Image (cartoon, rainbow, N blue to C red; front, side, top):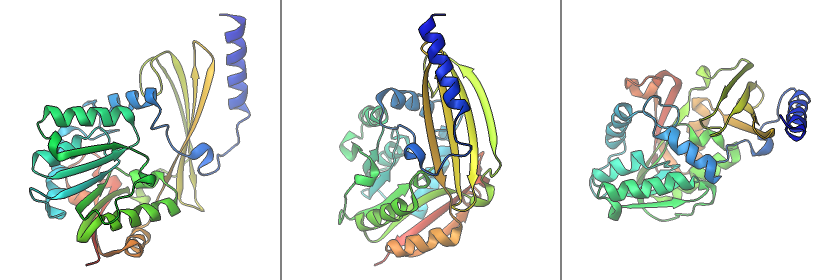
Length: 293
């Protein structure tokens, strides 16, 4: 081991040792580096891994959700659907196969490239538009979409004021009577204990060379935010990456109120994915909101 590597590892460990006891909400942006090309490639690998549903649910469960949303959103062939944080297009392309016209938005370059290729391979590229963009900057006002989806808890990775703005943006993109499906973690089921964990690996979401991962989870009771702080030491170089991920949780009454303030007239609430047999259904609450006519 070289002196330079020894020094880098020592500095990394001291930075971890001297870390604040508890991170401030939204420290260092409070989100994952979705648009980093290398991270995006690794995240895509997790999306496509059928051994788990941590990034995208496995095919069997995904198809059950799509069947459910098809009915609850009143979709039919020719309907125009906005998929917010579409990932690699696994939901969007299936909706397109059923006849929908799709606009999907995601910040990950690898996911968008995969979605475009998937649409071509499935013969539905003419019905799919995929855009690499931070959804906070999207602008589809008066686009007259029939429906929109914002699933797998992605609304929660934004601050409250950003979430309010996103709901309003989506409402403006829908035609009168159009519907939005939002999936969020059930606040009552969120882990509110301070947890720590560590592991080593040489392939995964955090890197493709040997690394040490040190993780911490905190609960901010005042703001109802789950905060995860990750320390990643790349063992061949001593480089330290530190990432903080925030999940803003909501009680049902707050989310319903936010949706109505954004321009939705009615909101239906479905705890546990309306009892779909998903492995983690109990962790989630699904909202289906109808835009004011």
